[in-house]
Length: 85
Image (cartoon, rainbow, N blue to C red; front, top):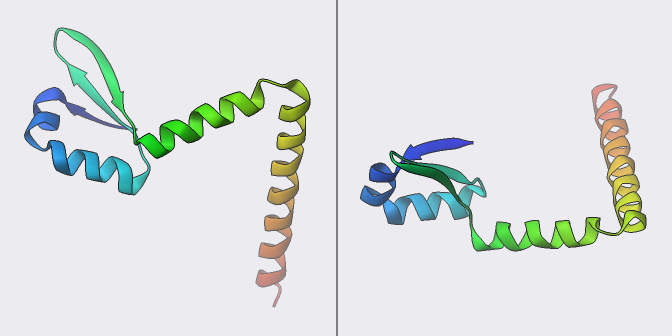
């Protein structure tokens, strides 16, 4: 995760916010006398909240993890097929 100082963030606030949203990558903002903070896009924050909500149910978490594993397996098989062509 990229880290910038408060001064850098303040000097380039619009560009920093644009980058956070377009790259979907949070940025740590360090502050000399205080704890650092994380800047994250609203879209990514809402997705994080949704994921946390869905994973609260053990049954739901198990189904989601199984689905992720299945997708990863299919992706690996597809890559092997492409290599063998």
